[in-house]
Amino acid sequence: MSLNAKVPLADVHFSDQGPVRHLHLDSVWIQGSMLIDSPQVLVHQYIQRMMAWLLFVDPASVAARRAMQLGLGAGSLTKYCHKVLKMRTTAIEINPKVLLACRGWFKLPPDNARMQVVLADAEREIQDPTWWGQIDALQVDLYDHDAAAPVLDSEAFYANCRRLLTQDGCMSVNLFGRSSSYARSVQKIAAAFGADAVWPFKATREGNTVVLAQRTASRPARALLTARAESVAGQWGLPAEQWVRVLKPLA
Image (cartoon, rainbow, N blue to C red; front, side, top):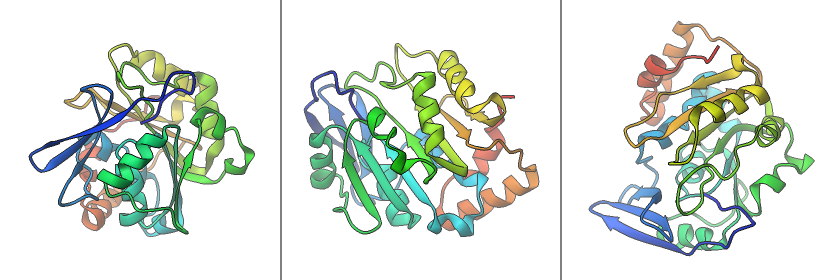
């Protein structure tokens, strides 16, 4: 997860809890986690739900698509899209200490032909026309060290996120924080994407709420979603069949 460029960059720490390693930014709040012996596994339920955009595409097309993460965290989504899904993957992270931690403690591979980490302010970087219309899966997880509220949470920001997406692209955003307002955040997302393009999950046990927003609204038949969920679960071991049961469009 990332920091706003207007505040000092936090120091990065990690802690081990049994088989799991956690990343922290100057606080006890967990900013990401990794199974030490299985670094590609997505540990938290909300991180798994950030992959629910897979329900909106043909699973056979995934490896030819492109993913972007705004906020690196412990590198979980970046590693998963790159290593497991075999996608071209770009992460935008403002704090170089986070990148060093991910490379040193969380087994993030070095940049290569299919994966790169861009050290930049996400709000500014996504306004570069180079990225517009290029991203199939945009995963937004931007928090400060206190995890109090999303750092970037305006209608203008979400409109810029929409502009990144291909016609059948999808944004997944994690809404969490003691000072955040889920209702206000969803209202801003709906204003930028259209209410008929927004698919919210209910909150996880940890209090994270993942919301999906499609570049082009669609209403896949339940049978198609179920078939795709079975394929996603079978190919990649994600709990996609549970997603279908609880994921519903906003409007």
